[in-house]
Length: 441
Figure 1 (cartoon, one colour):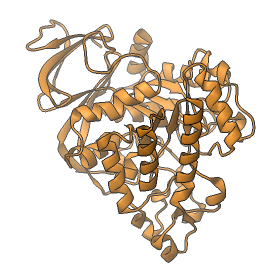
Figure 2 (cartoon, one colour):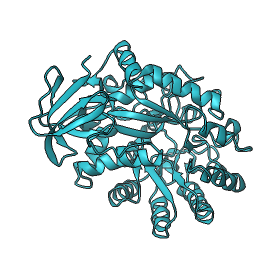
Figure 3 (cartoon, helix red, strand yellow):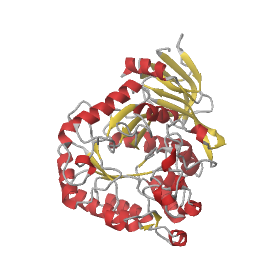
Figure 4 (cartoon, one colour):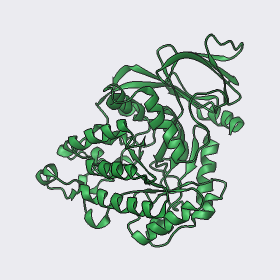
């Protein structure tokens, strides 16, 4: 594997055409007609060059749930989707609520080499919502945790949430809240409304999300701390975030690709591939979410990649697990729902899928494809279009909701720290990547 890669004729974030020279893990030059004898040359005519994507919300499942995913298989899936950094959620077994577990997850990511794996620490011990985890030791560990979340569960105790915000404020950390009032969602199965009533499934009201966001925004405003809202899904939640930002509250929010595309009607056939937390909402909500990404109310797109074994999704709806895989399909969905519709430019895509999540997660660098930046690059072909299938899923689990859906665009190359993890749409052999990753960290 060459230590130099010369990308020729790429469209830099959809704005100007240039060559990019990658050398020793950094961007060495950007310009016209660059020369690099001996470099591995990638003809990028017709391809969009973006800074490597950053996912602030990934479930890698290891340790404890390796039947669904491992750090290695999840890292491969991330690379296939154009990601070069992922933040791994804490709901593992044992829970990532201490320095030992977060360091283990980081080490597994380093060994795999496909992406930079940044562990997210749990807010409470065992995700039980009763006692704060040792946030300080995780922040000062070798994993350098900066984001804390009980995702999968809500930190529903308001005093505990306040204490967590106060604690992480002291070192610039952020609490990422899974906004779900547990009392309002007992046995909830899908969005509460006409469809749930017709199907006889217990409803999941929008207010269960919105009430927690409203409370936590007020807490963040009172304390002066950072707050991040995971997988926002309703028009009402958008209104709360928009109002809070107008007042100067330090709050950020994410939306998933599936909430930008899919709606509650897909539950009609009781196909559990469409069972997710928070649930798919209405077409009105989908339009509000797209508009909120476009106007900056929603800061980032994050996958909430949630792999599950086949038998926990291919079963009765009320017995099925919540969640969908989404790393591989994220960029095509953003292209389909936001770029092709004229809501975002490619520069905007770089912001919501790389720059802003990196900033929220306290990563170094500007991620602007500038000289001196780490050589994390994805080359994307926006002109292709294909019907999605499980063959497009690299994850160990195949619980994609997009089978049969036509998505626009495909990842052609992913480059992480100056070495190829995906080339011509194919994930590079893990032994090659692991060796290269050892050279570049």
